[in-house]
Structure formats: structure tokens, C-alpha cells
Amino acid sequence: MSRIRSAETTRAAILDAARIRFGAEGYERTTMRAVAGDVGVDAAMVVRYFKTKDALFAEAATFELRLPDLRGLAPEDLAAALMPTFFDVWEDDGTFLSLLRASATSSVAAQTMLAVFVDQVSPALTAITPDRHGDRAALAGSQILGLAFSRYVLRVPPLVKMTHAEVVEWVGPTLTRYLTGIIV
Image (cartoon, rainbow, N blue to C red; front, side):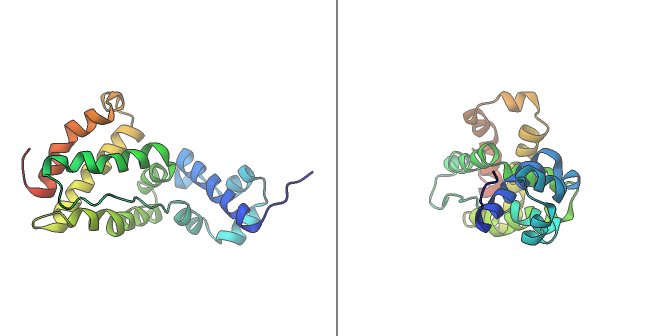
């Protein structure tokens, strides 16, 4: 007996399967047919909802960071306020890591990652920078992306072993310097 699915439920299931597939196999090796198979629908259904693999990926890779308001915080408290949001995204939502992995080989993924930075990360970071706002936000972003790549994609053993508190302790002064120019 087949399950009755609504269009909304089917579309959501396709997106969930796509996130898992893109995260595990990357953009290039993921096919719309494989995603359809994971959901138990015909590949034509995936095409019906998303038209192209690029469109499927773009929607599957969409996420909201919900960065905290950093204004008014003491410089030495910035990393402790900022990093929990990134840990949550890196560890509890496979969307970001899928996007990070795929951005190395897919221009669509790279553009999507850039849009996340421009639309979500940069405004939150530039709000607290004293000068050279774009430069400071870009440097902090490079530190955060490099950390995510090293810890969660490459799985560099010392970084993997660090607790969240240890990561904040080590990375915090660099983020603070990038964002404020203050050495803590």
C-alpha cells in the first residue's frame, strides 16, 4: 500500500533527501534520480518541483544563520557570543557543510555560499567594525570558514578533539582582532 503524500510533504521530503545526498556525495556526484530514489518518487517528480539540479541545490542549500546582535559587547566577549551559532549550524544542520563541500567544485554552490556571507554574515559583522568594514568582515569570515573546513570536512585531529570552549579560546583573539583591531 503506497503512502498518500501531499505536494508540500513530497517537496519537503525531496529537499531533505537532497540535503543529505549533497552533504554525503557533493554537488557533482549527486543526481536528481538518486534524490528521487531516496524519497521513493519518480525522478520526473523532482524535475516537476525543482526543474534543474542547480535549482534543487540552491533551495536545499538555503539556511538562516540567525547571528546574534554583537553591538555593545566587550571585544573579549565577541567570539563567545558568535561561535555558538556557527557550532549549531556546523553540527546540527547538514545544509552548511553540504554547501561548504560543494562550493569547492560548483559555481552554483560558491555563489550560494557567497550570498550567505553577503546577506547574513557580513551585515552582522560590519555592524561592530570600527573601519574597513568589508575587509574586517571578510577576514573574520575566512577564519570561520577555514575553521569549519578544517574541523568538519578535513577532520584535522587536534581541531576535532577540541571542545567548543577550547575553539573559542584559541580562535576568539583572532576574530576579535579582525573585527575590532583590538588585541585581547
